Amino acid sequence: MGAEPQAAVADPFERRSRLWAYAIVGFLSLLTVVGSFISDYAIYLAAYLWFGFVYGTCLQYGRFCFSSAFRDLFAVGVPRMAVGLMIAMVLFGVVSAFVTASGNSTFHAAPYGWHSVVAGLIFGVGMVLTGGCASGSLYKTGEGNVTAMLVVLAISLSQAIFVDLGGWLNALVPETWREAAVNRGLPPEIAVGDGWIDQYLAGYVWNQPIATYGELLDFGNPYAAALVGNVLIGIVLPAAIALAAIYFVWYRKSDLRKRRAAGGVAPGFAAELAGYWRMIAASRRTAIAGLVLGVAAGLHMYVMKGLQLKFGVSNFADLMTAVGFSSGISIKGTVFDPGYWYLTTQEAQLVGWILDKLGWNITDNIFFGLENGIPNPLLNPALWMTAALILGAAVMALLHGEFKWKGTTLELATWALIGGTLMGIGSRLGLGCSVGGFFSRVSQGDVSGWIFGAGMFAGAYLGVKFFNWWTERKMAREMAAFGP
Image 1 (cartoon, one colour):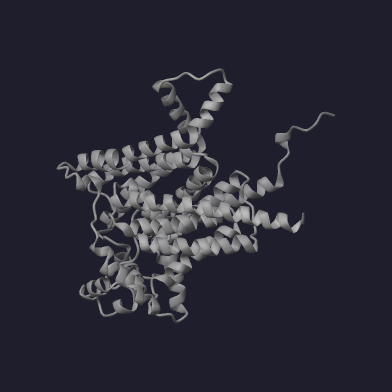
Image 2 (cartoon, rainbow, N blue to C red):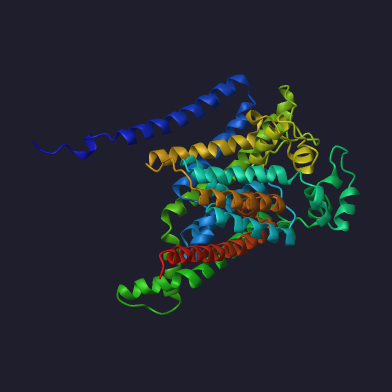
């Protein structure tokens, strides 16, 4: 008898994995259908849910992680992730430019200044220590990685606590910040003088300039401002320069070596251009993920703006109020509803909501009390996006046989908590993480995006140097234990 064809033998583990993947998709579909029967407004939450699902599948498929993009460059000279990142930002920018020019954008630019650099640096160090940024840790959570789960916990917990801290930290606040914050006349529920981050925001950050490249260059036509100012000048040219630097500093040497082994090296500009293209084309899986991610992120804004117009609202809190839910809404009458891909704030809201239920007065600050609120997790649109991102990553991992519960060690857990805490602090100082402070902002032509990214780049470099030193020191101790 001949051997039974391999395809005829079903792998029980693979079959179970596929069933779990289908079950997750089925559950999210059922949730969407049931929600639509309960209220027409549920489509607003469903939109966040399914875009989050797409983000999760793209991140997992392309192993898309901002930490890896920088770490791979500095540690081993591999540009794959950095190339995919640039592709995604350009595509997101092109799609969203048309959304912006048509007046259907949900994006709001952020203040830019030295605080963006410092915040990015702190975040960059943290993401290298953990081995994953905010988005990378979330998709790895979907793969069953316990260390990544600890990173997400540390980011969320550190933000929720940091925005409400005062005490001895107030001694670090310049008097000019304190005076400017107090003179803003914020609601009495916000104890400006008692919170460090409140004085930082109201006394310093809110006084910094806010602009996109299209606004700075003062284009009269909205399409020229979006396509030429924001995309061409604000995204494409800087991305092309960054990729050229990556090619000459990290990729060209290995490419020349391969070309010599294949039969010689043709000199000249054409040869360099061909090498530049090979670097981009070599990142196929990441590039595909970046392509889908960029297009989806642009469409996300268009859909959310359309739903706001459909329901005649500007924030999800209006829909909450319409169905009788007002708990957790901010003083401004809003909840966190970015309308585009954003991370970390909603995870901090979940922790804030839990702390509030445990008796912590967590809303006497700008972050929770004035701006974002702490709505019930079931009515938090951005949190639905995060949950679906994790589930989307889980589905993709299950379908590709890459899902596996992976435990942690004391050392990994320690780095996860330290690095996650730094990322949480950096996120709040920079008003966003690697996604909300860098990726989404750069893709919208926001001046603050590249500034935060420059800080992240420097922080990642320092983080890699520190880890190299730590590893060498650890290996030296281990070798010394064996004796002479």
